[in-house]
Image (cartoon, rainbow, N blue to C red; front, top):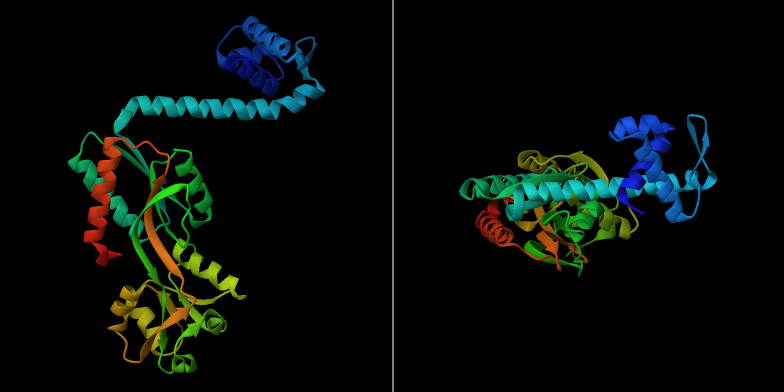
Length: 304
């Protein structure tokens, strides 16, 4: 069984005609016919019955087609991958960015500055939606991405992480809220509280949402904002609570006169990390890029 013969079969099945298949893939009709016959011989099963100028799939041919089409598609993708790699060589780096947020855009700006200083580097950055979290990890594990970043609350042994932030979330709450009289909060205490969420479709609030669900409730996300002044106003007037890193809360609290910062137990640590597959063989340019990115992110931690 060869790729060419599979391709002949897939095209002939799609067209229902040897002649049209031959025209589409730019070879002779005899070549298509011979290729399909050799494929049938190797399978020891018939794929088509021939009726005048038409090809009619056998029952096995119908069952074989979707698998053959998938195999051809996958092999085409492998060929494209190899062609792209040849075009840019060892100095290529593919980066996955989770979500359209401040941290992702900061990483993107560092990619641009790295390329300006290292003209031989070819870096391709791709943004992934929060719902594609599993896809991002799969692509890193399969080496389709060299490195990625995301918010996360757990660590996977299959990856090496460069963790830039690992902090528990704190709750900023109005001093007028009756919950502020407690020593600390349990997650269940927040069940009926209106939240300010930092995004409808972002990883950070998704992790908070998932954690709340572990304690039997879906958070009441009444407001959506990343504007510090607006968030501080809502909390100050006891219209909402917000869960954030403590350093973010400190910057917001400057604008508040009537708030309290409270622990929420058990603590939810939300990490921000760059990560690569643990088995990944690193090129010199990838190591250089990781070092450059880590240093610059740590030096600009006030931005994120």
